[in-house]
Length: 321
Ligand SMILES: [Zn+2]
Image 1 (cartoon, protein in one colour):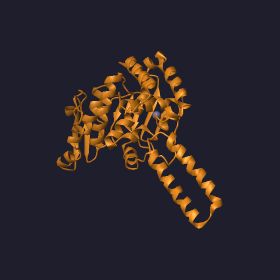
Image 2: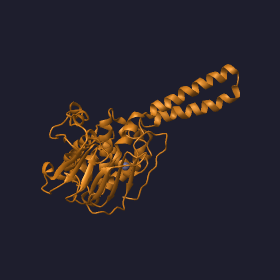
Image 3: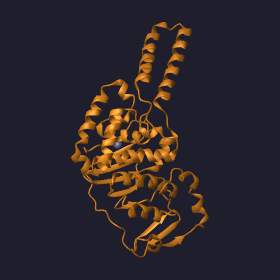
Image 4: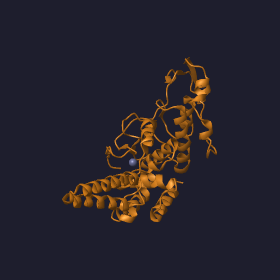
């Protein structure tokens, strides 16, 4: 992957991420004696048996246990849960990631228990389907960025910013809503100008109106795939699916298979075809790595309408299976 650093225009209330390729740090297990703080609780690692119940001891607890139960709406997470069982505390949620080889190193500090369970539920599915083990997973503390990946061959670090995902979800607006708003503003303006007799300015306004009407016909509905999400939890899923694809791109099996060339070819075909572009997102059109990642997120949610790309993603998944 090439070195990419993205800052996306303010107008789009959408997925923002960073992708890099130059990260080196050894995955590590936390040593005995480590103290971790989650909310009001402090844990100390006292042994290394792999069983979090024994290995981590609560050394400080300010609030009664009832508080922790309140934080986690169980009914919501049970939807579609076949094998996944939510963790009861943050240490167990981290152990879930380590014990299932989702990542060699993890730091869930920054997430709520509800968020990390939502994340883990998706990560375990992607882990099982792709066989990829991340080098590191952690909270991403960066404004305007909903997720990030640092990937070199077979080593990918994933970070997720649930705070920005929440912001993005709350401010979600489709391109169509935004363009329609502009159209109705201009139509109002044209009418006002007519009423005032300012006829000479009307052609200019009409040109702008036509531009918006053209944009409405040719734009995709959303800037990013995550905007399809109907719930905050679903948006987390979209963001992870997008980011995980960058880890897939850095996987040796994928690199060796040359499927990247086929996807790049499809990207160049879509780029020059107005009706095909409409099937994707604006973000998918920024460059081919994003086209690949956005396509996967759309595919996984049955939103991808391009039959050629659906076949390529199925081919990609077979290579990983
Ligand atoms: Zn991306």
